Image (tube, rainbow, N blue to C red):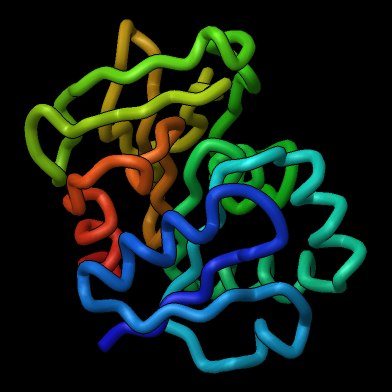
Length: 182
């Protein structure tokens, strides 16, 4: 059984935990440095407010150890704000340039289905004040999905990001895909 740490400082962490448990993962929450020091096979950075999450990562002393572990190969899955955190402007572990709040305010939130490479066809995608990837800056980073010509999912080595929230739907394929990366 794979043991997954879920950053639980702010955002949609409970929904990720529920989805991961439904596909057979052991899950624990990371709120402080002592939590991070537990054994783990992967990490989920949930959606929420990236600015708040970044501040809390710094304040709790989690920023450097999380970044170092990702840089040393710890598999990580970032959704929405989690994708922003992994981008070049924050943790800088993934070679992507992200456009924040690209789909507008809360009223600009929407749902669609699209194909996602390595995952399947008609993957449900819920976008909430979502970003998108403006640019992939290395060949090591593969685009996995686009919606309306915008990159909404990508993978670079052991890092997976989505602009949408797969944890808010019943489809488990994206979480299963993340677990298969471990």
